[in-house]
Each structure stands twice: as C-alpha cells, then as structure tokens.
Image (cartoon, rainbow, N blue to C red):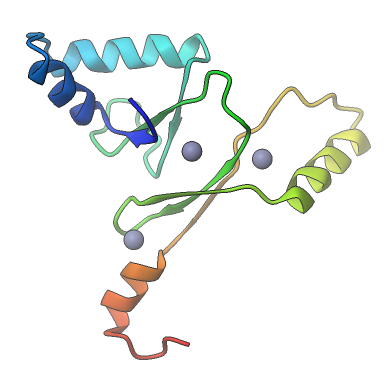
Length: 123
Ligand SMILES: [Zn+2]
Ligand SMILES: [Zn+2]
Ligand SMILES: [Zn+2]
C-alpha cells in the first residue's frame, strides 16, 4: 500500500487478489506492523480499532509530518525544517535525546472550509 490508507482499503486490495481475510485480521496485522515500526498510524482517531484510522508505510521513508482534517479525515503531508529544528531545541533544553516524533496538526482542510462557508470568506 502506498500513501495513506485505512484498514478497509487493505481489506479491499487483499480481497481483489483473492485473499479471504476478515477486517479483524487486517486490524490485527496492522497493529503488529505498527509495533514493529513498519507502518505508523496517522489520522484523527486515537482508537486503534476505529474505522477512521489511517496508516502509512513508514519503513525507510523520508521523514514528514501531517495535517489532519478533523472534518473529513484528509491527511496532508508536509515537512517544514524550522519545526524540526525547534523540536530538537526543545528536547535539548530538557536534556532529551530525540529518537523520533510524529507531529499531527489538526484542523479543517481547505476543501471542507469551502464547503462549510460556501466559499464565502475564502481569500
Ligand atoms: Zn517532523
Ligand atoms: Zn476536510
Ligand atoms: Zn504521511
């Protein structure tokens, strides 16, 4: 799976290849992969079994962070060097050696804002 995906997408892809999996199996497998650091859970939900959970393949991928729309669940990737540097500065101040982080900025995406306001207020 490339990009961001949900358990239901995995199920669909596997079934189209002739595998008769259950959604529970997909959840279980994803949480094992997450423990192993091969996938990471991103997205608005903190409940690992929620259908709203998004995963992504993080093994040997370049680091990036996420903007998550709390309205439609869209996940937008970004990398912003200043943020990375500041996080390291915070860690250093606390005598902390950073091993990693996942930064998730929550809000309402441009498309949802447009739908909510009907385009009014759009700059
Ligand atoms: Zn980052
Ligand atoms: Zn949205
Ligand atoms: Zn991502």
